[in-house]
Amino acid sequence: MRFDVVIIGGGPAGTGIGLELQRSGLDCLVVSEGLGLEESPRREFVEAGGTLLQGDTVLGGTISEGKVTGVATRNLKGTPIEASCYVLATGRFFSKGLISTMDGIFEPVFGCDVLYDRDSTNWTNPDFYAPQPFEDFGVVTDDQGRVSIGGRTISNLFAAGEVLAGKIGMQTGIERVVNAVLGRK
Image 1: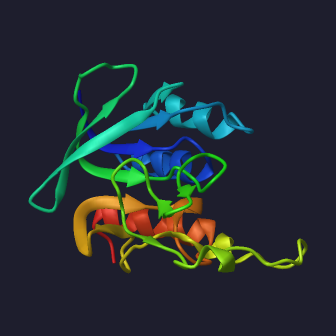
Image 2: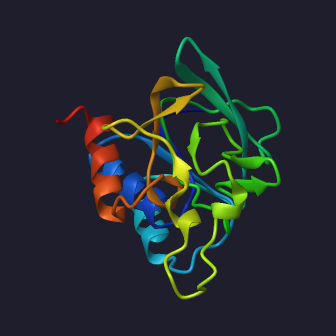
């Protein structure tokens, strides 16, 4: 299967990016593990000609020479999905876009670099109602939204939404990735 863009994650960031890119003339696939709270953006994406794999999970990707060359999903059992660009919009902890263990925090699809405090005693604030430090943990990106793995930027893999490190706004993250994929400044 071949698309212009594969978006991993069917929440607000993933479907927002998919819809914008689909309307810009690119052929997009959104892989969405679960159901969303709001189905309207997914319906709009499909009505714009996008392909939605709902109820499927990206198990991993192949990276060669600093680029993602394909991904595999649970339901397509070995059928590679290829694209020019890939977008990681999997969310944080509750949606399993980031996984925390006693040894650290990691991104499970590609193994992207994750910014977090290595001392787990600093992950939370004892005041439940105060901002929590773990809310700033997430995938590291450059100024175009491209992720890094092992300190090396992956040229065609972008991240947006809750999976990102820091306090970047949802709309800013979506616009940044859409502009980068379309080659705008």
